[in-house]
Image (cartoon, rainbow, N blue to C red):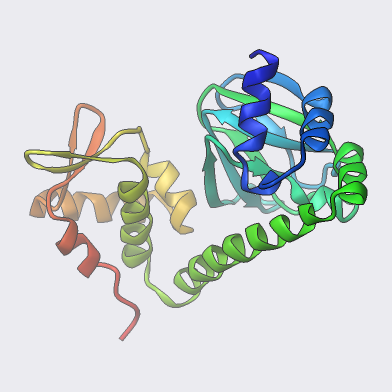
Length: 232
């Protein structure tokens, strides 16, 4: 990845919107490019906040896990996203983990560089505030679903989110342009694999969601939306 490509990527980020040329120069000089294999940890829960990551390509999953090995997926971040902004507050242990889902290209910038940038260009913190508001809103919606909706509604909601982000229209409906296992959905919806399996078997039997060439095909998006209902 050449210097101009790195500069263009950084300049296009909402974090660095309207950054002056000298700030962009400093960020480019400090950025390290890395190709990370699929299923690799960018950082684990509890690790110190020392680096920030820009996702040039690929997909990175943000998650929390318990000491018993249970894992809950918060969100997947893709091309253009920057991760690890909590490092600008302190270098305490990270509250969430981050793991690549596909081979991913990332840029890495040390927290000290961003802290120095913030001193000379404080609008960085305005941009981070706006980013935080957007991220928090999505998290509150997710937590509402986890707290008040049954598992089938949670799985349907997660599937709809993926369809909006990765769905491709075909003659039979909407097909996901990515592989997502039932184990993935169990982590996405905070349920057991067995219960998630039963939900997908039911949808397959009714023809609502079926598998085509290792991809999920949603035959009727409107009917799937009807599955997202809270408890009576």
